[in-house]
Amino acid sequence: MKTEKSFTNNAMIDQLIENIQKKGNPSVVGLDPTLQMMPGFLKEEFFGKYGRTPEAAGRMFAEFNRRIIDAVAETVPAVKPQIAMYEKYGLPGLQAYDETCRYAAEAGLTVIGDIKRGDISSTAAAYAAHLEGAEIEGERVHTWREDMVTVNPYLGTDGIAPFTEACRAQDRGIFVLVRTSNPSSAELQELELSDGRKLYEAVADLTIQWGENCVGSYGYSDVGAVVGATHRAQGEALRARMPHTFFLVPGYGAQGGTADDVAGFFDRDGLGAIISSSRGITAAYQKDAKYTEHDFAEAAAEAALRMRDALRSALSL
Image 1 (spheres, rainbow, N blue to C red):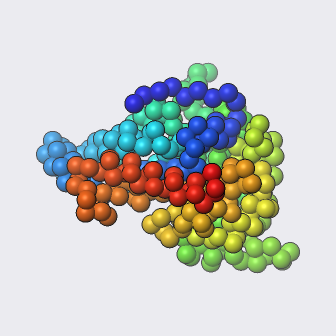
Image 2: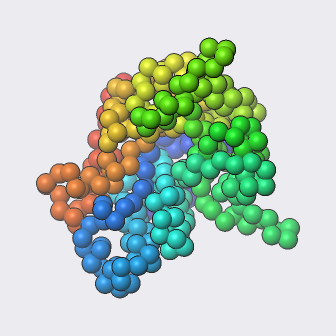
Image 3: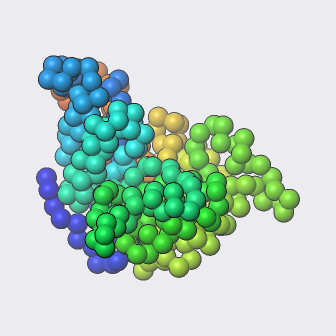
C-alpha cells in the first residue's frame, strides 16, 4: 500500500499528532532487524543469492522491513528504525536503512530515525543532515529520509542547537534522551545535583528550553523527549513538568512496560506520547506456535493491533 503524506500543519510534531489521530493509535513500530529474527526462508533466499555477506544481510533486512511496513501501515502512524542494526553491516546495511525510511515515508508513515547522535560544532551540524540534508555548491539535497531523530544531550546546548536549527529550517523534529528505559541509566540519570534536581530533571528542563520556539498548533514542541516506559512514576512526574513536550516512550512489551504503565505519560486528551515496541511486534511470529515463519508479517500485524487496543483501553479512548 502506497499513499502520500497529507497534513494540514507545518510543524513536524503536528504532523505526527495528526497521523496518530488518523490511526487512533499512539504507537510506533521499531524496525531493529537482526539475523536471529529473520525467517528461515528469507535466509535461504538471500544467502543463496549473495552468500553469507553484508550484502545478503542488507537486502534481507530491506525485504523483511517492506513486508512488516505493508502489514502494519493501516494500523500504526509511525516506524522507528534503529540505525545501529544496519550500520553493523556497513554500506549494504545503510542502504537497507535508507530504503526502509523511504518505503515507510511512501506508505504515509512518520519516520523516526533512532540515531542517538551527539557531538558539537561542525560534527553536530553534519549529524543534523539527517534532518536538513546537505548543501552541495548551493544546492540542497536530502540525503536521509527521517522526519524526526533521537539525539543525545550529554554535550549540552552545543550538541543540540544544530538539530533545533534544522527542525525550524526543514520542519523536522527531535527526541532528546531524558529518562531512558535501560536499568543502568540510573547510574547517571538519577545523580542528584547541588540544587536538588536529579540529572534527568535538569535535562528535562533544558529540553523545555530548547523547544520553546518550536511549538506547534497542538501545543507540543518539535523538540520532544525520550522517556522510558519502565519508569512509571518518573514518567508521570515528567508529564506534569513538561506539558508542551511530546514523549517517545521505549520499553513497552519486551522490556516490561505495559499500557497501564504508560497511561500517565499522556495528557488529559490522550495526546502527548507515542509508545514504541520493536521485537514484540516484528518478531511476534517467533513467540506464538500458531504462526509459521511464512506468517511473520501477519503476526506483526496482529501484535500491532493488540498493542493499539491495549493502549486505547488504558487511555479510555
